Image 1 (cartoon, helix red, strand yellow):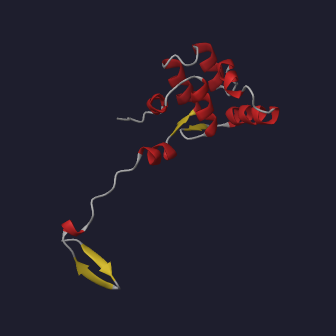
Image 2 (spheres, helix red, strand yellow):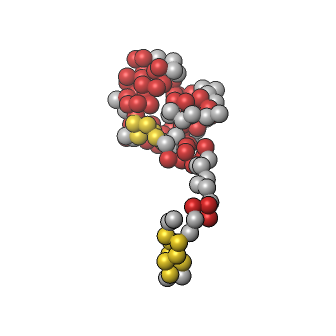
Image 3 (cartoon, helix red, strand yellow):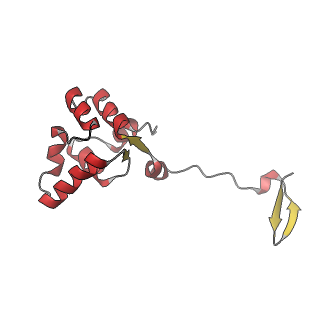
Length: 122
């Protein structure tokens, strides 16, 4: 039987007194999931979201033309910030707001984005 400390006293408890672990939610998983820019660009090319030449260029930190539409309508300062973010990012976070904008513009569902990141969804 496992031993635990309760109020400074070590006591023996049965395993059935411990609650079953709660599995993480999809939001919890997304919050900690990322890909390197290299892996992300490769996933985009394999999924035919970016043409191969653009994926290669994007992996180098260059802004792909396919992403341009996602920035349409944003103030110039926000466009510049997004492109600098891309150019300097080593990793692409699953929950980054820029990724949400790109997915929305490309009509890519959350489940499809999860698949790009290797997250299995039901």
